[in-house]
Image (cartoon, rainbow, N blue to C red):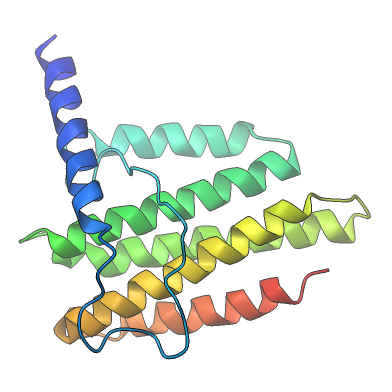
Length: 183
């Protein structure tokens, strides 16, 4: 009973922090040239990586990923996971003492975006038709990922000391170009 109350209280705090991180104001000098902010709401990530029960969330997600057999549902799941990891990294970036998790979380987010693109390509090569809204959703998701990660490095360049975040931005830009080329 105590654990359930703790989980519910923690989830509420995470949602509140997530709402605070998505303001409409960009820091001075961080506005991407010629681009407007992408209107794409990020989901609540739930438990963060430093939560003691986080491993249960990972196990649950791996089981779900394994059980999904429909390719379209798999694409939707991968996009959702990518967005959750992005949202998680944004919360960690803004939380004191949690910035060490940011690069790894962003990399996992990019990996799920790559999986989603690979699944769309798999659907396409199998000759099946896929909903065009999947491509649009993936493009918006990747665009939001590029925007958020660019803003992170702009706000705090020292957060990218190892170059991992810059590498993820380059990786995401390549994914965006590949996804844009899908027909």
